[in-house]
Amino acid sequence: MATLHVLVVDDEPGIRSGITRILGNYTVGYPFMDEDFDFNLIEAGTGEEAVEILNKQHVDVVLLDNKLPGMDGIEVLEYINKQQFDVAVMMITSYASLDLAIKATKNGAYNFMPKPFTPQELRATIENVAKHLFLKRMTLKMQKEGKQIRFQFLSVLSHELKSPINAIEGYLKMMQEKQMGDKIEDYEKMIDRSLSRLKGMRNLIMDLLDLTKMESGKKERKMREIDLAAISRTSMDTMEPYSIQKNVKMTLKVIGNTYVLADADEMEIIFNNLVSNAVKYNKDNGKVDILIEDKKQSLCVVVKDTGIGMNSEDVTKIFEDFVRIKNSKTKAITGSGLGLSIAKKMVEQYNGTISVESIVDEGTTFTVSLPRQ
Amino acid sequence: MSNELKLILIVDDDADYLFQMELMVKNLGFRVKTAEGQAEAEKVLETIKPDLAIFDLMMEQEDSGFILAYKAKRKYPDMPIIMASAATAETGFNFDLYNENNKNWIKADLYLEKGIRSDQLHREINKLLKL
Image (tube, rainbow over all chains, first blue to last red; front, side):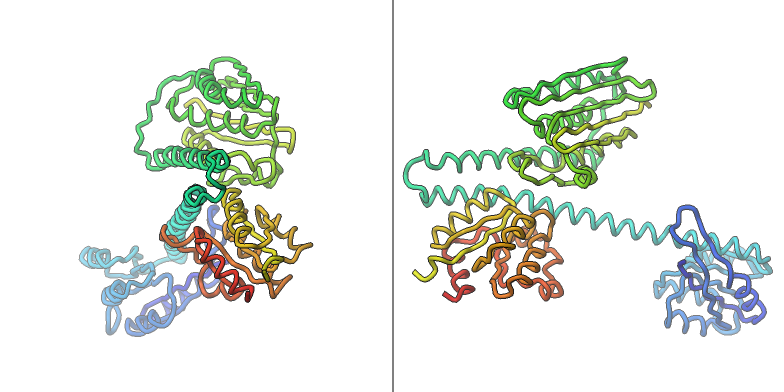
């Protein structure tokens, strides 16, 4: 239960105690809120007293009468705005003239409530204020978290870019200092490793470009009817040199109409990521079976491999940015850790879903469902 | 030489960096044991007490090095630990893991940026080993 602090400012004690009685045991809840709100009532008889309370303690809502003996309601409202208190102000008045309404709204009053009001009107009003406050705070919180996620992404990214630079620099220095002697052959491993780290960096940068294009939304999508089977064959051709090395056999099975309205480049990125993973994380002499099935309302793509598989804990993490499963079996396999996160984001842009099932040492199956809009 | 038998444990999840550090430290005249991550290092520390340890910061997790240092110091309070990291400086991103609060519970003896020169590293190791 969260408590909202409500300051009631009115010179009539009867109104103050009435409001306190009505809201004292009232709670507000919404299906989308984690917890209900209840209300803690604070009373002030004058504008001066209200200002004193606002300076002393946190207040969420002010129910403010305009006609007060000294400092009037508008003046209290001006003060609140000048001090930039995070409160929602509700003006209560029996003299609701147009002039006052404009003046109060200019000064940031959230709403009006005409006097006299029924208990039901008061509850409805306070319910709206509570909802307004909740949404406002939720938005702020999410903005902050968004920044946090961005920051984490950049920290990890800088690490991912610096590691290969350090490694290559280290090897070059060793060669410069001729640490292994004068023969170039003795540096072969270092040269191979340097080239391999450069390739890894290049892949990371390519993936980053995909991600940036997608997140900035600037890239124009060319939506047309495309054949996913053709896209799948292109991906398989791209991976063929690698699959031949590992003697992994790739097959494609098609059921029904495999045309869908989509951007061909984006579909290629999704297929490339899934097919290259299926080959990379396979065992020698393994298999990759791709199935594209027409489900009328949607197209279903299944990429099934007979590879090293993952445990259930790893399965929960693999769609996150920069997540790579590190163990003795994946040690020699390079990757940016972005491929699946990109694939997932792309699939979701089409209101589709991607899921994974995996058994250690038996294989992994990715299933993508793309709705036909 | 007095440091002939000193054993140094180097932990890093980057195989290339590990290989280079191993070679560098061996050339300085130490024995070297390597581990490719926090989990493997913990296993090594169960049976072996190195004279000094060099940990990478970001391995399985962003703070694996710190956790490893904490555990290692609990087991061997007198073993000096060097924390090597590529995470700070040039990029401008500073981990809040580096704040004073955390330094109090993370008992690393020295923080070094990666890419340290061989002679600098030698000096720091000798200082920590009181050679």
